[in-house]
Amino acid sequence: MSTTPSFTHSKTTQAIPMFNPTNELAIIGYHNINKALEGVLKSGTYISGPAVLKFEEAAASYMGCKYAIAVSSGTMALELSLKATGVAAGDSVTINANTFVAVAEAIIAAGGKPHLVDTDAKNWQMPKVFTENTVLASHLYGNASAAINSNTNILIEDASQSFGAKLNGKLLGGFAPITAVSLYPTKNLAATGDAGVIFTNNEAYAQKCRALRNHGQTGHQLHQYCGTTGRMDDMQAAILTLKLDHFERFLQERRHLAALYTHKLKDTPLKLPVTEPNLEPATNLFVVRTKYRDALRSHLEKQQIASGVHYPTPIHQMPAYASLPWAQVSLPEAELLALETLTLPLWVGMTEEQVNKVCNEIYRFFEDGK
Ligand SMILES: Cc1ncc(COP(=O)(O)O)c(C=O)c1O
Image (cartoon, rainbow, N blue to C red; front, top):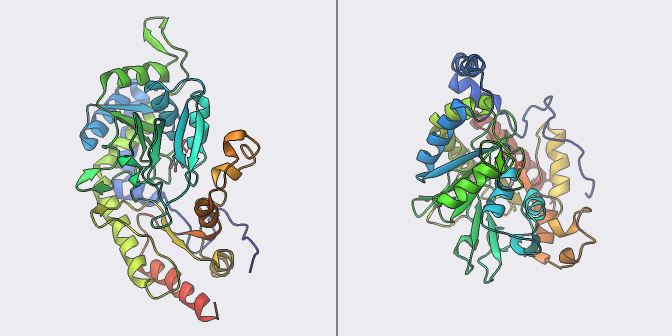
């Protein structure tokens, strides 16, 4: 009952993998991708070139905001967003304990100190908080965090897992003055390598992020800030622009698959995701809960069905941080969620038969006396 299965996302021999990012590329058409990549190669500009500018325009237009700043990863997008808003040495930044560890890394890289809050037991998201700290609200799985309604001076959104979701008709990422999004290959808007993007309407924030991603440069050989190498390359930008053209279709598929899972699993003992009635989700991860998580994973693995855990260890219990003073907290909901959370396979191109197979095996597991 307690053995943790050893499989990972990258195992390709399983009949049903966790993700399959190649379907999106097939839908776009490899001839179109080859043409776009050939254009980049022939342009002779491979970083911060015309393809990056084109992607930034398309991304800002999708988000309905003034500036999109293309960067090298979601973690970089978070770090630069924090620095642009003025997070300084020793500043606390409030985050959820059950978000991805990159959020804590970015705060520390920006000179700040993570301040962890417990998970909302109702929807497994970061709750609304009252604080003078900067609040960095990660929306998880494709759903929305109420932390965007926090009473705070500075709010940053992390829409990495919920890019494309709409709350009251407005895209997540459009609620804070600055938003970071990961474009990692398994995300809703997925690059074929590392990439990220920052959204803002604030010109000063945009200028600072642009400078910081390029060694703090503000003019020819003039380095106003201590920056970094955080730029996006043109090959990724060219593919991402094509992906954006098909993004609504990809989101529809994700929503359809999530609705199928929800419908088919409603009579199992699993706890299913709870979304706000005014939320149009953008399911990146179909996350369920059960106290029999590890046994269910083992059962699925035996049937050649992959599954994931996002995430098995809350940030304050990670070896990297567990001994640090700010990690000396007890956050019971986040700790319980880490033991119970289970992510089922979901990707663009997954068939209804595959969803059925996963659900049937889950029924079989619980019928066997759980
Ligand atoms: C919620 C969240 N924030 C930040 C990140 C970091 O993004 P990246 O891996 O592109 O650096 C991720 C990526 O998995 C994420 O899921």
